[in-house]
Length: 281
Image (cartoon, rainbow, N blue to C red; front, side, top):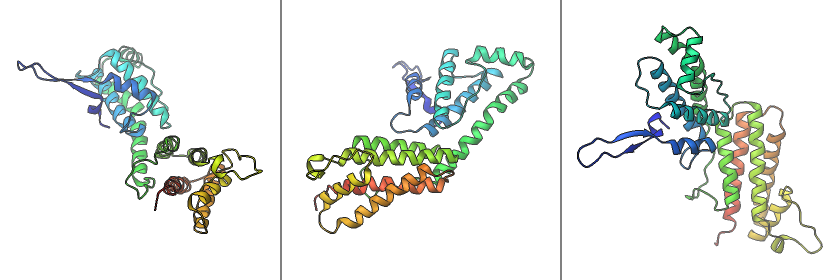
């Protein structure tokens, strides 16, 4: 997202008044809760960080800021929430323009525009740098997409877990983050287990229903029932190895981005393979 994406156009009147652009407060409030459809936290964080930094610099120097005092307060609250979701802490000792002015006075910047620019740069440049690195990493490490033209499996809980997995992988930078990606991979598999296993179809006489976290047992039965015959052996092998890989990354002490990416690619493709098992042939 770009800074301009946080504004919407208000049309002018039929007698020649030009349209104006005002900040989209609804979008900012939505972003505080989570990314809206069509965007993601990293993209929103990049655009909103630039908007807030630019407007604070305008206010502190020669004017021209586009946000009101209340809107800056909302933008800062939203930015703090979005950055937190991508793993960056926003530690700013003011909450709006008024308290920013109070802060620069305390820092002896009252008589220097450049001192105020330096004050903002000290806080924001490390954030810009980290967001740029995260964006580059995300572009270089896009997770797998299935061969199907559909954008989702059509299994709501599974699709929700996959979206969260993609979001978590994009923002990951540390071994702890990558271990969490492994946890999300297991979450996708357990969501598949809950979705596809049907006791009426898959439970044999005299057996107790295995719990959802017994994913090998439950997915084995689903595949056997859906495919039948000897042709299901290889698919069951894919499912078992994918489950093992996800758990390995989840429990590894220092997993790498490569480890997490391979596991994430695998569970996304497994979800689509199992969805295809239900197709007519």
